Amino acid sequence: MIWCTLIIGILLPWSLAHPGFFTSIGQMTDLIHTEKDLVTSLKDYIKAEEDKLEQIKRWAEKLDQLTSTATKDPEGFVGHPVNAFKLMKRLNTEWSELENLILKDMSDGVKHKSFLTAEDCFELGKVAYTEADYYHTELWMDQALRQLNEGEISTIDKVSVLDYLSYAVYQQGDLDKALLLTKKLLELDPEHQRANGNLKYFEYIMAKEKDVNKSASDEQSDQQTSLKKKGIAVDYLPERQKYEMLCRGEGIKMTPRRQKKLFCRYHDGNRNPKFILAPAKQEDEWDKPRIIRFHDIISDAEIEIVKDLAKPRLSRATVHDPETGKLTTAQYRVSKSAWLSGYENPVVSRINMRIQDLTGLDVSTAEELQVANYGVGGQYEPHFDFARKDEPDAFKELGTGNRIATWLFYMSDVSAGGATVFPEVGASVWPKKGTAVFWYNLFASGEGDYSTRHAACPVLVGNKWVSNKWLHERGQEFRRPCTLSELE
Image 1 (cartoon, helix red, strand yellow):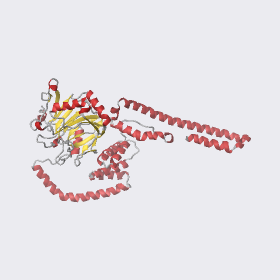
Image 2 (cartoon, rainbow, N blue to C red; image 1 turned 30 degrees about the vertical axis):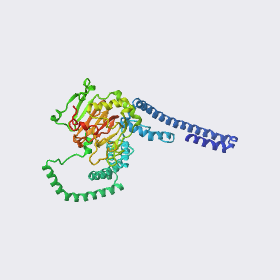
Image 3 (cartoon, rainbow, N blue to C red; image 1 turned 120 degrees about the vertical axis):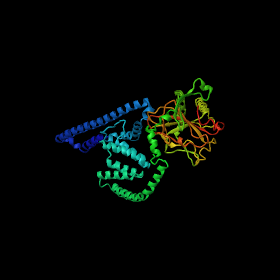
């Protein structure tokens, strides 16, 4: 369009404003040079369009190859976090840019690689920052800075990264690190107005805290000495750190003595006719709380039916609000879920009865089968399945008492991440398709077992499908307390 306009703009003045040219050979010779200029302009226009079309062609070929790979296994493709991020980025920005390709400089082309650039990390950090999620802001900005320090060429600079990073660190209470990062920023840009202001403020706060800490140090020292004498550990890890360690596979190793108490066995469901000839395979995953894994307990065919039933109904997963007792969404649970009733499909009914036969617990008062799908980054931070004493109305609407036990099916393998971890005791249970894990949330007395506090680790690569059954107190009265504590 630009070159067409240029050509027409040249032609019109000469053809319309100078009809007298045809009466003079001398003047007509000038038109030869004008036409030569037009031909040159036309060739430039063609070359420019060819270059742009070639860029579009290369872009389309890359996308064609990428989408061909993606459509062969859509879940597997978006199960890789970088692929998922790049897909969202293309749909939100790159396709819009393509619409204006003829009017824009596309000399760099479009790159598609399965890694995040420093700019990508920076943008993700900014998203976390706008949500006041300073913990993840620090992680993304740290990664962006690391890549820049390694020499990556980027449109962003270290000053911009350090600006966000230092403030995110400060918001989390680490003044020493915030001060150090601010000084690094000022080494790169001594005139940075905000950093100079922050430096003075951080130094003022640190000086003030130093005076307060000095007066409290003697008292704290006495307290620590007292705790040591009582045999109480002084250096403990916060729950988030334990949670993240377990998710990385850095679980607590059992002593040989404890390990000897863990067994694999065949279980006939307390001589249930369904399992006498084909008993279920059990494996002890942990001793306290007792966590049992059932192997080959749900078939691939059953899994596909459950997933097909759940997919049309999947919606943002909810949690019980302890104050209202109602279901609500929460930032600490990132997944989609659906609920399936036994009466709507024989497979769901059969699965429910299998749980009842193997646990000896009545499922007629249990909640419906919940099916959950965790995509990349999907997680459920540490929580209890049971209602605590300060949450008396948590399951009031159900009218079936507290959640006595949890049964959890793993309906997919997960390439990386996705473990079920118990931060209080250091246990990690990793997904394995076709298996299920079971544990009691309450002691035989009805008191909650706080060691069952657990979490679903973030899915790093892949796609996680689970389904769970929460069994309640009502219907178990004649089984407690004698037969509640063991599965034999």
